[in-house]
Length: 64
Ligand SMILES: [Zn+2]
Image 1: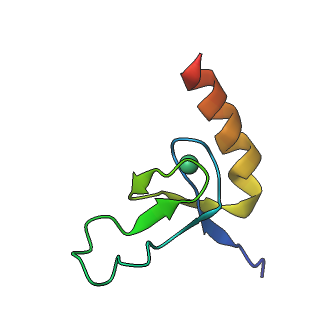
Image 2: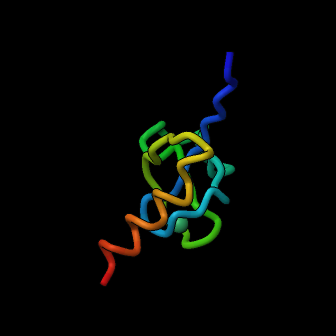
């Protein structure tokens, strides 16, 4: 069996350097994810770790 690793990725910059905001648990659970790279907050999609390069490619296409 293959062990797939899923990571949360920032839909804005493609960084996986994200975490739950320190105060996130005290407030509502409306914005559970926080990107340390671009300070984007919200619901981040979870993707397979091996798909990260693909995801970033798509991001670049969208930006233009
Ligand atoms: Zn980001």
